[in-house]
Length: 418
Figure 1 (cartoon, rainbow, N blue to C red):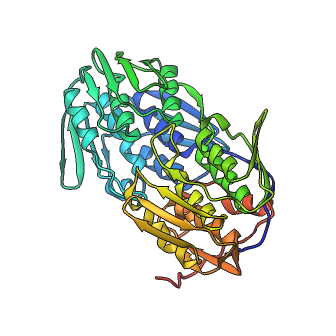
Figure 2 (cartoon, rainbow, N blue to C red):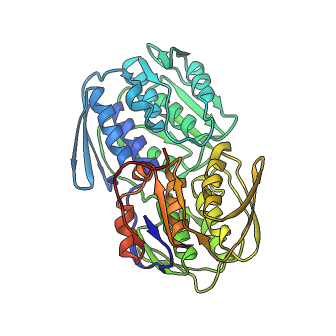
């Protein structure tokens, strides 16, 4: 329940990155023994991944912001549908299980309703590494007594495919090269984690990864990098509400494109020793946005920027090049009075001074957060339903908003929309 009109001001702390820690947790399967991760966010997806690892035979213990994962000599190799369907990142166990056990059976993933995200590149890459990989009866089933290094080329710099093939190749025999690899900070974090385990990975941060396979890896301790999408969400929130927010722990160097867009909108962005601050003193100016793989504008911040343009001065075009079904969010935003027209990959937004509160429903993590932000600049009260999606990616979202001055509260009960 969001009542509009508040100006956000103060400080907010950024936790470890959801899109990194889930992959680090899965990668812990590569080494027998106890791996410890720090700066772990307290979010639903971490709980789901913890339960998935337990079902594979691991012991997972949380102590504050640290998670210790103890992996047996031979973990289980089957990831069931009832957990995998709740979170797409579950597919990340595929590579480690295949590398460690010589076999893996992972249910086809679910997660956010933001479009088709096929596993074709995962399957083709594993086959080139010497695995037999097929999709049957709702599962991806892969077997390989020992993977063998090879030259891999990705048609698109897919983060998921890069991760799967990287995690499979670190224990393969020989050298594997992945060309057109993803370069997201979360992937760099995963590479550095693997190096800490004893993997040999070259070209980290570039579009070409070279992996020299090793016989075995060792458990390690690793600090999760800050969540750039959460940091970007707070940055947009400051602009939307003409606020002044210090984002502690935020990495401005991971958000150069997004922060540049906020500067174009009229915000003042300042890098500080422990993060960055965003201040907006006037109505935002409309800014065009085109989503692209990193270092381009992140698709996960697209709903927030579309919301910003909905109350901006002028007309803007947002182009979505990564996930085609992100426009499901537009239907909800227009319920709040936004003037948005979509055509294929493009959305044209004509800014209005204020939105109007109404019941809306979140279809994915980022849409849910963006709808809450939209409620901050809407007259009256906005009810955001299906907020369990927000829980998957944001730790203490409501508490942080309230601490910044927002009028937001959470209620439980039957959902009137369904």
